[in-house]
Length: 458
Image (tube, rainbow, N blue to C red):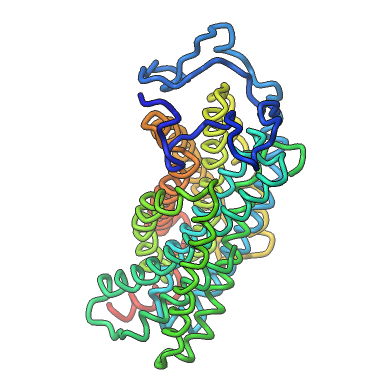
C-alpha cells in the first residue's frame, strides 16, 4: 500500500504533523484525543475477519480497549437525533401537503426531483459535517487562521458542488419524467423550470464539549431537508407562473455563472483545492441511485396514504444513524485510534427505538398522514425501520473500511453511497409493506383517489 503522503486531498491525507504552512497551528501535535482508546493500530492489506475488519494492532494490550466514555455516544447523539426526527416530521408533513398543490400536480416530475435533491443536499452537508468532525477531533480547528481557512474553503466548495449537481439533478429528473411517462407534453421551458428550481434550492439551503461525529450529521441532514423542501416548493411556485417565458433560463444562467466565482475561491484555498476536481463520482452516482427512489415515490405517492410523510423519516433517520457510525469510524482511522464496533453498532441500533417511538407518537397525536393507526401499522413500520437501520449500519461500516483500505478518504466517499442506497432500500420496503397491509386487509393504506381510479377502470 502506498504511503499516506502520496495521496491528494481526494485520498487519505494524514500529514497533519507537518508544520510547513504559515496558517498551521504551532502546537498541532498537542491535539485532544477523540472518544476512543489510542492504539498503534495501522491499516494493512490483511483482512483479519474479526471486528477490526481490515485493521490490525501492533499493541495487543490495546486491541480490546474500551472507549473512555461508553455512554457518551447515546448521551450526545440521542438529543440531536430526536431534534432531527422532529425536523424530518416537518419535512414529511411538507411533502405530504405539497403532493396536493397545483405546482406538484401539474409537474409530477418534481416528485422524482425531491429524493434526488434531498439526497444531494444531505450528502453535501453531511460530507461537510464529517470533514469538520474529523478536523475538530484532530485539533485542526483549534487555531484561528486554519479554522477560518477551512470554513471559507469548505463553504465555497459546497456552493460549487450544490450548483453543479443541482443542475444535473434538474435535468436528470426531467429526463426520467420523459422515460417513465412517454408521450407526455413537455418542452424546453419545463426543463429550464425544473433545472433552475433545483439549482436555486440546492444553492441557498445551505463547538461545544461533545464529539462532533455524534451530532453533526443528523443536524445537518434534518435542517437541510426542511430548507430544501421549502425552497423547492417556493421556487417552483414562483417560476411556474413564468413557465413559458425565458425567466427560468435567465435564473439558470445567473446560477451557472456563480460556479466559476466560488470555484476560484476554492482554487485559492490550499485545504480544499484538490477537492474541486475530485470527489464528484460518489455525488453523481448517488444521485443516479436515489433517482430510483424518486421514480418509486412518483409512482406510489398517489396510491398509498402516508408515503410522503413516512419516507423522509424512515430513510432519513436510518441514514443519520449510519452516517454517525461512518463518521466515527473515519475519525478513528484518521487519528489511528480504536473504535469499539459492536458496542457502537448496538448502541445506535437501540437508539432507533426511542426516536421512532417519539415519531410515531407525534404523527398519531396530531393525526398526520390520514393513516389508520392500528397494531399492524405500528408493528410493520417499526419492523422495517429496524431493518433499514441495521442494513445502514452494516453498509456504513463496510464502506468506510473498504474505502480506507483502497486509499480513499471515507469522509468524502461513504455518505453519498450510503444515503443513496438506503433511499432505495427504505422506499422499496415501505411500499412493499403498504402493499402487503392493504392486500391482506390488515390495514387499508390505499388513497381514496386510487380506489376511485380502480372502481372507474372496472
